[in-house]
Length: 113
Length: 112
View 1 (cartoon, rainbow over the protein chains, first blue to last red):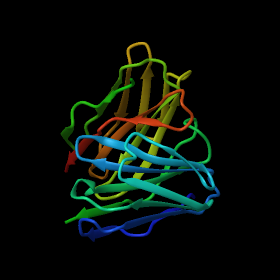
View 2 (cartoon, chains in turn red, brown):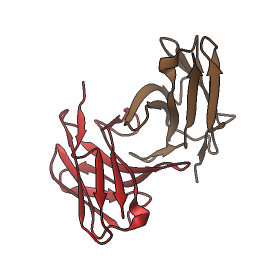
View 3 (tube, rainbow over the protein chains, first blue to last red):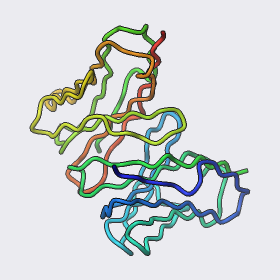
View 4 (spheres, chains in turn orange, red):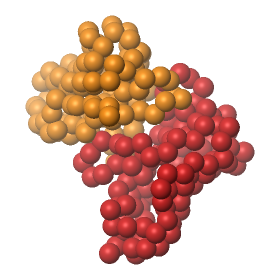
């Protein structure tokens, strides 16, 4: 079974702090994704990575950056957290493109005060 | 631009009933469609994936259908159980390599 873990389940940060969210997968998948999920809006793609050190912007990359130094690890960075970044953050992985299903981590609920 | 809609946003039914969840999309040129389940405060679990050339997929008490021409998919749940209570999301794969377009989900409550 694919296992996707996220570094924190719940996180409380203050406005202006730099925030790191980490995702680790154990299935040697090429592709990793960061989404945010807000009530009534579904999942919105922030960034994805199709290889080590490779990244592509999703629909809402503003205010975020990512890092993929190793194949199994994909980090989401909030350079200067703001209250409108309070959300549920979900990491996902897949071995292929859209023809393959995505496997999700448990999510990190981030509150920015 | 592809848009995916799930109506209703919430649904409550008594245990044992058969039910249908709906997913509609605006552009019929899709690669596939997936249904996921999300338990409260948790990540998503894939339920069924239907390729664009397929009409339906089945897994246990779940059956998903796809009608590209009308821009619709349905998830049929037979003999519902309280353990089926969750939010169900559909996602459409477009011809871009990686990106899925997501519906907002239907929150399902099965009353014992």
